[in-house]
Length: 413
Length: 103
Image (cartoon, rainbow over all chains, first blue to last red; front, side, top):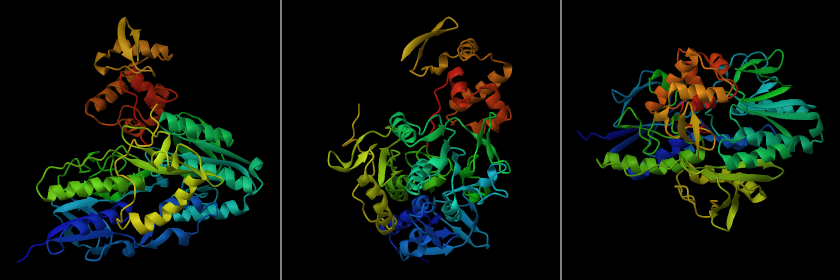
């Protein structure tokens, strides 16, 4: 009897889809059965949610069916996973089915958990409190903004880490532009609270973004760690007794890994899986790999990180499968466009050891994108990315940028 | 990087005042740094600092959330002990590197 070896991928979002394509291309169909499991049939382009409250995109712009992006000759299972039994090398579904594996890729992502913050998801959820990290929240906020005549708009980050670290900043920059265009910017007070000590983490980017906040008359409230929301009186409270009042609260709730990780006993206290930051292999199991937001690696939770790290992971998985030592190492490369409003954007490109630096990307001098700059070309880059995502990234067609962060074109002073 | 003297001991600290060599740390040094921050350290302060030093020694990351679950203090208690930016303050007093806030 011919025994096919098996790879199971849990999660068919950005990371899972990319790995499915890479693995199917690399591995013989007669020897390797690849199964991918996900609860949902739809795939959302999450970077597009940011534009929905301001009328830029609609739901149709950001949603597609998952199966279009997955390779043929793969077992595509739409079902819920009950738990992963990494000791017995099997994935158990809630319907009772069991999928055994030789190698496992966990790509279950991370989700927003408004229930983790007392007072947040109560009577006023989606009435004057919104998240734009879900399609429902983004659409509800769009409805609210349409008729809003002004007041205190507070953008709040609850806790670190959270996916798409620049999105809250983009949100306030776009809000500034949106209300300016509507002629009511003087009636809207925009406030940005964060548990960080500045607009961002690393010095050069923090300075650039902090300056933009000031220029756009957006008030920064740093070192604010949200304890609870008083939705009756429209106040957010910090753990050390500080308060910020709002008329409209837009919040990034606590982000946690999928509950299946908790049920499987594989995660930390935020359900993220302890993973080697260079090899991308689970710290606990030699045949388990983790890609994307589901891991605890100290890189941003972002699609670009999933993309750059996927190339490392496929290399390491193929070496492991062939009984060779892993030679590929992820450098933590991330890049993010930052919408700054009025048709412009900035761009940051960095990794584990190098903070965002100024310069040109991807080609030295020519660019065309300017790092830490503020340009309309960067904005075009951000918009064009939606097409790149659907047509190239997910299906593992090559993009003309290097996976490892490059110092070419960067100013290192 | 500069040299500073705490409790009679000359130490190397970085630009933000964090000790370069965490092995040189003593409770006396902690009390001296605490005084710089207008903070008088109690047994509870030291319990939290030992917890942080232990985690760093094991290679584990530091988060306010994990301190809140430590059983030593809850998050409110942590803020009460080390006001303002508690993790930055506690690590500096505890002779540990400033935690890397990765976003």
